[in-house]
Length: 124
Image (cartoon, rainbow, N blue to C red; front, top):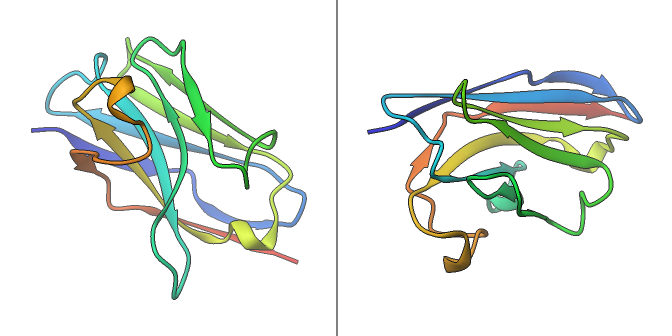
């Protein structure tokens, strides 16, 4: 089993930045695809970004492309989401996720492990 714990959320003004972290425990996730998702009030959970086990492949939702950067540190079992130029519409609970399958199975869905989420609120 893999446990994922997010941190780094908070309240920030529009145009500001936050860095989310995801710590994995239970087993190494160095060979897993890692992703970030978010869920705003009254909306379905949506894909934000994903990174392959090597870090050589990344994928972003169009809404965050150019503003968010996903990265990972396999030696520390950590995943990050650097969020810049934040907008009020980025307000959501952000979830870290891990996927056992291959990157080529599709990094937008079918994740096996999920964190509890961290709240990000962007004020206008």
